[in-house]
Image (cartoon, rainbow, N blue to C red; front, top):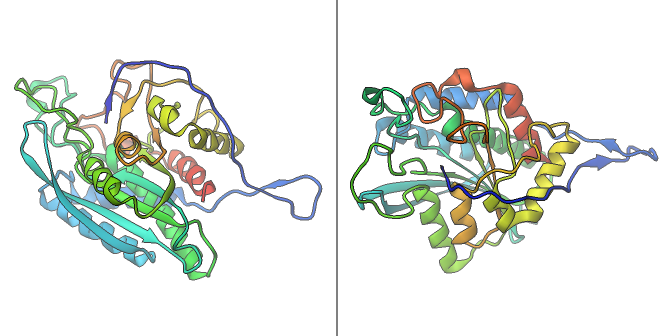
Amino acid sequence: MYVKYLLIGIGASILCLFSSCGKKTAQFSRPAFSGDSAYMYIERQMAFGPRVPNSAAHTQCAVWLIEQLRAFGAEVELQKGFMPDYRGNNQQIYNIIGHFNTPETASRPRVLLGAHYDTRPWCDEEENYSDRYYNVPGANDGASGVGVLLEIARQIGLRLADSVSITPVDIIFFDVEDMGTPHFYTGSEREDTWCLGSQLWATNYAKNLMPQYQYGVILDMVGAPDASFPREMYSTNYAANYQQQIWRSAEQLGYGALFNNQQSYPITDDHYYINYIAGIPCVDIIHYDIRNATGFASWWHTRQDDMSNISKSTLQAVGEVVMSLL
């Protein structure tokens, strides 16, 4: 993901789950989600090693993700294609799409949930120049969003097994999100070098507009112990109502401090191209700290993006918020 520096004001609010339980005062219902399970899914991704595109770890992780989605009851689609990188060289892309359907909901507008599963080939935020050519481990930047979505997929699978009606959902693991132009590159570059997988998906979707989506939510860097999720500007511009719903839901769940009322700069993440190219209102839930020069944590795009920066309580909060939408 990449930040474009422009600040605007943002609004907030609406959505919560209540059940009356036969009383005059509504009782709050907390959605089912396991932060422990999401944490284990992150550990499993990390065990493959950095999931850099065209590496063995990347391929092994992709196969495992497909197996997990199928085990949870999804119909899995593998979208293949090519997109030019910052130098204009074509990169192979494998987007993994899990469709969760029930007979009575298959034709209804769907909810799109996404995260990227690749990791950055370069630690270009390292202070020591010699360290910049290491691969980013990608515990938070990549694996955390995937881990939360895998646990959501598991919860959806449990509902399907119990014949419980669900909101029709597609879970998409986007590829080649994090291969944007490295800081140390000095040659000519093309535009739009980030989020190649979502650019490919959005371009193909715009050609046929099927299936129909109500809205989308992207999760990126959602596992840090000191996470902060301000309201991101592109999300407000394109999907204000849905952003308000998510932040109000977080407040009702008791996570208002985490999903705070701060304003962030617009961030070029997968949601941008889903909004701009595909025309689907899409919200980005992403860790952003306006106090830091980059806007991200000190270990962002460094060798320190490891399991020490993953908190089960943060995963629990994000997972409950997203599950409350379904």
